[in-house]
Amino acid sequence: MIGPIYVMWLRQIKRYTRSKSRMIGSFAQPILFLLAFGFGFGPIYQKAGGGDYIQFLAPGIIAMSTLFTAMFTGIEVIWDRRFGFLKETLVAPVPRIQIMIGRTLGGATVAFAHGILVAIIAMFVGFKITNPMNIPLALLFLFLIALLFTALGTAVASKLEDMQAFPLIMNFLIMPIFFLSGALFPLNGLPKAIEIFTKINPLTYGVNGLRATLTGGVQTGLMMNLGVMIVVTIVIGLIGSYMFSKIEI
Amino acid sequence: MPRKNLNKELAIKVENLSKKFGDFTAVDNISFQVKQGEMFAFLGPNGAGKTTTIKMLTTLLNQTKGLMRVYGHDPQTDKNLVRNNFGIVFQDQSLDDELTAYENMEFHAVLYHVEKEERKKRIESLLKFVSLWDRKNDLVKTFSGGMRRRLEIARGLIHRPKILFLDEPTIGLDPQTRIHMWEYIKKLNKEENMTVFFTTHYMEEAEKYADRLAIIDSGKIITQGFVNEIIKSTKTNSLEEAFLKLTGKSIRDESAKSIDRMRMGRKV
Ligand SMILES: Nc1ncnc2c1ncn2[C@@H]1O[C@H](COP(=O)(O)OP(=O)(O)OP(=O)(O)O)[C@@H](O)[C@H]1O
Ligand SMILES: [Mg+2]
Image (cartoon, rainbow over all chains, first blue to last red; front, side, top):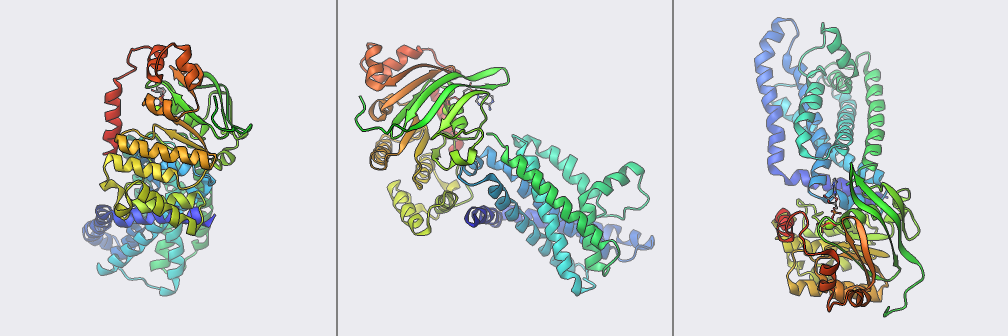
């Protein structure tokens, strides 16, 4: 059982580390966001009494790059279907749930490592982790974000036949999840409809958790954030496994 | 007549099997059986329904109606049990471009539970067999169409399934390689008593290597039986003539040539 999960995991890692353009692209984006938003909104944020914007922004950008990498590796199922490799794994004498677990753990590992590297980059632009004691908990949040959204990407991609759907996923799923998670701006005083979306958006809890552990010491609601992340990850993981097991080619 | 002692066990049993895509019936109420140890050719013009049938038998596609059994298991409901029994070389490409030839082989061997020592031995001998041993550490995306095809066949032979499905295995290969491949497959069939279910558009391959065959056209099986019987009953001299007589001379969908090229194009 370990063998198949391990090779599927290893495959995701190898594909990622071999694709130089993908790696460069996926680091360029968070750096750009950190610089553009950090320097662009920093002064306004400070004037409005929010304090140091980089401290607020960096956990959001870390979550963002983990979200994007996780969704993209999950969505790779579409590519694998298109280029044929998917059927090779689907006919193997291995329960599909193991294939799914291996792929998802592989994607999550990549996204998780990616988030950590972005955190390190953020430190170069002035981000400070206030309480190092909380780092393990922050890593847990980061890993849950990675896992949840890789599973979500896999679930969505299991239902899609071709890459034409990609812009749809980008604009109607990934972007709203990112913008309405509190990654970029505080979620206060939003219109009711948008507020509801932020409440059902799992990334909101991930961002809250990351921000609390990295910059704010342990705050109230931390355990609630953690609980929500764990439960949603499990639920999405189960849905993803089910969808993946039903793929027809 | 059968040249070898065939087991009574049935490898494949298909009864009144149909597959619809929307309103279109791709496979139309077909029935056939393949015995353990047989080399069975499944022939037909482009778009006849061969690949669709193989996809249903190999758990990739659900049937619309009918009954299927692969070594007694139902591919629709007992997917894992069926998957334990077969190996497959797909018609279109199924390699991971971003992995090396060796990694493609190795990952496959792990997925198919081949033990580590055995794995190494078989991978080496098969890569040598398809003349890709010195390219083993190159990424597959740097391979030519024929090299990819050879690698796919080698990969399909790493484990020793009870039944091997080959969907146009020799497409895009030069004559030398084709003969080489078929002799190897024939040897496995004889020595390991492996059942082989294959499709091909090269009638001489079917004539030479199949024990029995079925011809499918527009989703329906129009004839099945031993190769020499079919040639005799159509009063022709070769399987190719018999095939043309049975399926007519009109070309399906697009010319076979351009479809061939399209397929190879995808691999290049
Ligand atoms: N996913 C699908 N959706 C709709 N139609 C399909 C699908 N897959 C196959 N078909 C149709 O079913 C018919 C049978 O296709 P199939 O691939 O089984 O043919 P084939 O006998 O393997 O042909 P070839 O020799 O060209 O490989 C074709 O008309 C094809 O267009
Ligand atoms: Mg076909």
